[in-house]
Length: 372
Ligand SMILES: Cc1ncc(COP(=O)(O)O)c(C=O)c1O
Image (cartoon, rainbow, N blue to C red; front, side):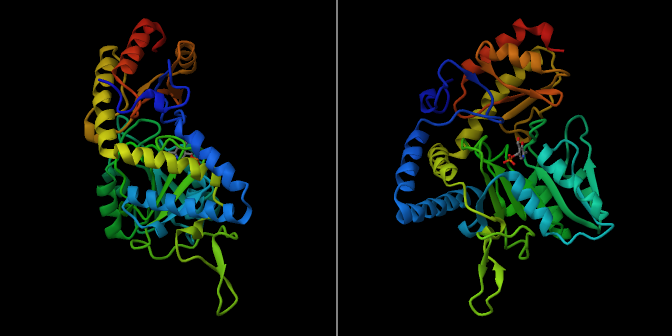
């Protein structure tokens, strides 16, 4: 089965078995055009400056469409971590409050939560059971003092796809804000921004962009949001009072400029993904995932990712105590995958095909001795 798209659409993908979309996938050939356009605009002074903001608006609209939200709900910020910090800063924490997350989140969330201790706030971390976290476990960890739940829709660590609709419904009835990190979901599986109060995403992974971030504020569900970080972009001067007040839309989270070059690149990526369609991408990665899981099972590996299709997206992980050597060995053969945090992560995206999976399984079989 071929990939959904030609490998030649990507820069420097020829001859590489690239299974690193959850880390650093290659850029698109069409990004070269986007860089040129940005450079031309940058040379045009004021006119070019306003063009940058026009592109910014186009990208907000494309992201809004992906998330089932409106453009004004979207902000193009520096990183996913910045969005997490802005949300945490917006809460008026009181001693005895708590915030809930999982024990297998990426450092962005873990570090941000660690800062809450000094306010007398408890960071509750839900442990996985056989690598799985159920929405009901997260709900059970909440009580009347819970002020935030932060979770990744798809885990960077295990590849599990959490049932966000279910979690969202449960938390919604209790009025507890949900911050959904979709860094490993957006671009490969459907994400609905209406199922969270706030959504953040890193753009350099499944979205095929570069190091910049997305933020969404679902104002309909959570009308109040005042981040403590304020800058020229997040606020305006109220004409009537002369006071500096937060913008009305999600840009109140964006303290300074957008990373305009990254935004030009992201526009290309989003248009590219839109042309293929998230549902087709999802079906493709799930099919290849079935083949991969079968191969990993055949090697007797401990697979951390749910085998059922509704429990995963593009990441498939298996435990490995010291993965670095295997990662390096594979890289020497131009087979790229991620390995840290006690596991190997294989990421499948739209440019991967059956040959990639076969090449990987053949490599793992040949290096069986290195698998534990
Ligand atoms: C789930 C998750 N969130 C956030 C990040 C970091 O994104 P950023 O560098 O945009 O803050 C990562 C990086 O791997 C991640 O896996």
